[in-house]
Image (cartoon, rainbow, N blue to C red; front, top):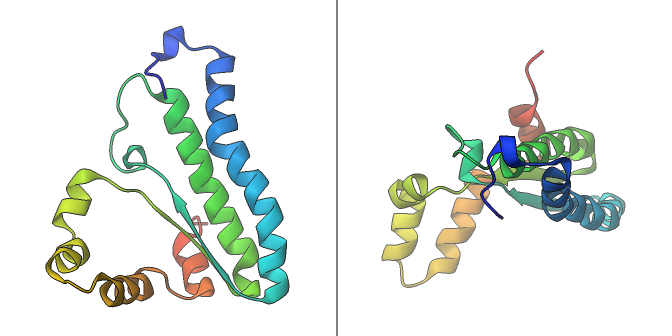
Length: 139
């Protein structure tokens, strides 16, 4: 990812970022979502970016655009696949959130990380229908 001010960016700048960030995800999901739907179960977590929370940094319009495109894709797929029992969520890591997180503090304090991580995941990733309701755009 290169820092490029919008005035210096071209469509190719945006297209390259979209190919890396969005196209690759669409290609992978087009293979795995039908299998998950057939099995009637699945969980997908989109890793977004701190640019999706708060004010994005300067000179990253191309990167920010693709991350918001991924957020839109996640919401659309969560609604579309909820009835197939596939939970689709997204996380947007950020240093300030991670450092202050009670889950991270408990993981750091625990010598046995896996049970803590499983408990955190159960709390974070609810049922598919709850995820779809939570991620739905307002009317």
